[in-house]
Image (cartoon, rainbow, N blue to C red; front, side, top):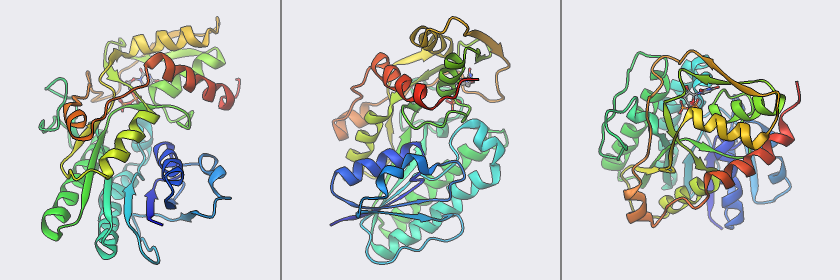
Length: 314
Ligand code: UDP
């Protein structure tokens, strides 16, 4: 049986990856320091004899006994308010944590996949963003702690690949949504759903004309799975290229939740908030034969089911 280590296992994406690898017949070791993750996301896996959980901070030290075939590094605060609150931890998990895991991968001769991000493109001057674009990042702005940690993570991963011959994979993840997003993580989608369900104002930042492209979590997990088992070591964008304004997203969620007390309100735009974002997924299409399958209306409906169950009325 092949063994995979998934860091950030109790988080949104990490927990979905644990499910996928268990379903595919792997032995899964989940690791998390529970800074932003929640055991609720993986509770259902504990009875499974092929699932183990280590409560551990990968920025400090990582030890896994025995053999290991794959490592997927998904530990990190990932929403703008989280990394503003935890700037040092964010920098450390992307840099020191990645270094520790690359060392582990080298010792175990494991293949390592890192979770990079569309944030490496910053506030992009090229649209849509393809993997050859180097980005427009403000290193000392509030988002710098996340963006630069992830850029360093890519750099050190490539160095281990080139210098040590380590098998590595780099996925650049664009905005993703679905069940198990933390209700209060501050991102647009959980914020709008919880505000609409509670009958509060949906807090659109700025004039709401900034754009994002939202990918349903099942599509993203499929793309990551294919990338891991491909023989391609350069970065690959995984995301849904259907781009919408944040205003439109708020309107769609208002309509879906259909709570007459909820309405849109406007707040200041955060510093360095990217104005546009859309993945160019030509590389994923040609190398992985992958493209998203879940439409936004279907994905939003599934997400609504989840948020209805977890959002407490105010
Ligand atoms: N946003 C918003 N209201 C919120 C949270 C976010 O209008 O309550 C905006 C935010 O300014 C950004 C977009 O929605 O332009 C997506 O933000 P999110 O935090 O979801 O992710 P990002 O893509 O910025 O990392």
